[in-house]
Length: 480
Image 1 (cartoon, rainbow, N blue to C red):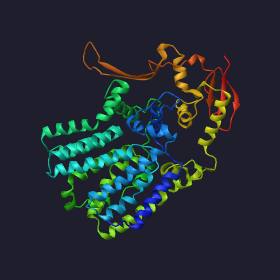
Image 2 (image 1 turned 90 degrees about the vertical axis):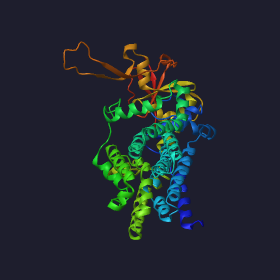
Image 3 (image 1 turned 180 degrees about the vertical axis):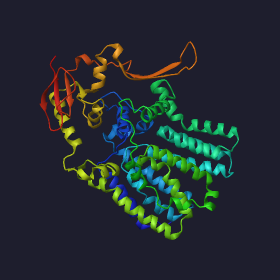
Image 4 (image 1 turned 45 degrees about the horizontal axis):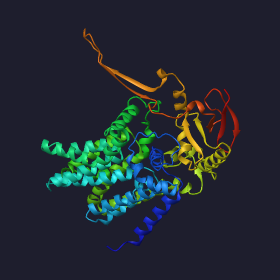
């Protein structure tokens, strides 16, 4: 195929934008970069992640070699471009599908993110393709391919399990029970890399999946262990609707529905799931499938209109990324940018650069020290993520500091108890409890810590006094 110069120019611009912007992602992004830094032996703190360690592990050699997280952007770029090409190939090399995907706002939105979602979505797309081939009667081997690809998507991003469950149920509900069991086994084959890693790290192969499932439950039902909750705001729903093709309802014709019934049912239930947890990034899981269908059924007039709408929205979506080539802003991606418009702030000074400068100064003045970081529980992660020096022993969470100097009975961070509610004269109620507590094998000498660091003027610990102000950070010293 002769390469269209317009397509090549668009791809080059996409790559340059992603590599130039200082934005590296928002939700959960530090979890993956922290994990990679930890495996590279460069992370000056204890690791805490609620997602799969596998994605961080595969990037760790490059992170350790170059002292940079740029490899994550490169992986994301490759994954997104492979999604674009996959839709083009699956559509029978329909050039309309290629253009629709290249200009899709979700592709440009996810470009700079440190996230396994693009890679997981690529595997999921191929899982969908093969399970559909199986459903069309092309043999059990396609069910095997589908299961392995879906298992791999789960291995890198466990939250995709809900979409995997919906996809499997919709396409297999009228099949033989044995095939359903085969499908489950094939998924386990794809999950093997995560199972092996979790067994090596934790001695329990299923910990990653279980931890993510319980974490999602804690957020959606219990509000999270710190009471963060989940944002179900109407504004979030309106924002994600901008990313959905405007002609999606054009597919809801009787003759089209009869041909694509299972795909449409999957998309319907997936849409409900996304509306319950409205995050733009999750749209990457199913917009490639929608685009695959649009390219098949849209007429030329509808296709051109959709292309123009995508182009306009994409130009708006990349504005925060373009700004962050030179400036720091309080609206660092499309959703936060929309919210920040009434009070948008730009700064030529990067907070990250200032923190790095302060840490360079602190490590010279106070070498080989352990620093407790406050005032919030996870503030230590900001410093541990940006610090690449070698003279700080460890950054410690203020939460861990309090827990390890408290009585054993006060070592629990969060605990939930679930009990039956017996209505008859039964002698027993059945209960079970889930708790998060301090680590059993923590060997940090908390009693020897003399210094604390905070971005705020207040530290949050009694017995520590402010002794020095830097550009961004404040240093506290223990006086009692």
